[in-house]
Amino acid sequence: MPEKQEDIRPFFQSQLEACGVDYFDFYLMHAQGADKFAYFKKARAYETALELKEEGKIRHFGISFHDKAEVLEQILTEYPQIEVVQIQFNYLDYNDPAVESRKCYEVCRKFGKPVIVMEPVKGGNLVNLPEQARQILDRLKGGSPASYALRFAAGFEGILMVLSGMSSMEQMEDNIGCMKDFKPLDEKEREAIEQVRDIFHSMNLISCTACRYCVAGCPKKISIPDLFAVMNTKQIHHDWNADYYYNVVHTGEGKGKASDCIQCGKCEKACPQHLPIRELLKDVAKEFEK
Image (cartoon, rainbow, N blue to C red; front, top):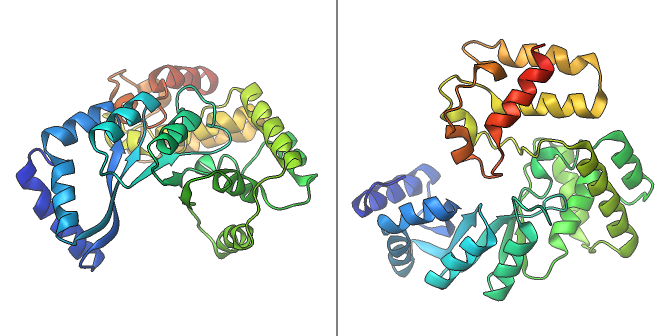
């Protein structure tokens, strides 16, 4: 995070060198929200990026965004030069009051900005489904859980690209396969997605995407996403495995337990999902540190 405008160009040059390129096709102001937008404005980061575009070092200038739709509207009003917006967009977050996927998408459409989708499978949560939810999609006999999530996101007007993290050739082939001869979800598939969404909501799972932004600043070195994943596993499967892995997660060298949280709040300031992490850690401690 540059403290002043003079810091930006050297940092930008180091990025070009690290990537071994002379220019970037798409260059985004990262994780914009009310606080970071104010910070970037103070350092004149937007103005500098637009200068770099004029110089040919950036081809397309945009933002990635994590906040309320009204903040996005403010940013796009103040900087109409923004060409593309990257938002979190998936069927679980579509009407979520914290993430506001649908509302943010609608703001992008209002301003005519193409959308890049991040978190289409919500950090893997829409791939590793609860058994009841998986059965609903399996009955469709039309593809993998990931394919339904990707097709949901890609089926909206104005979507430029859907980004999906992949860790195996099988995942890559599956993702490419569902996009090669692309078809939006039909009515039957949309109804199934609604049922899956209802199952997730009924289970009261923690909507962590494991971005790990919260971990870096934690003074007690609590591996927060891992503890939340174990908590969700306990909610889904109700077996002893989760209790075992809770001990595995926090017994690593220097790692803290959920109960070690000192309530400093650094994690919540870093969380793109706006989760009440401090309260959730209390729930985790209550469940696993009896």
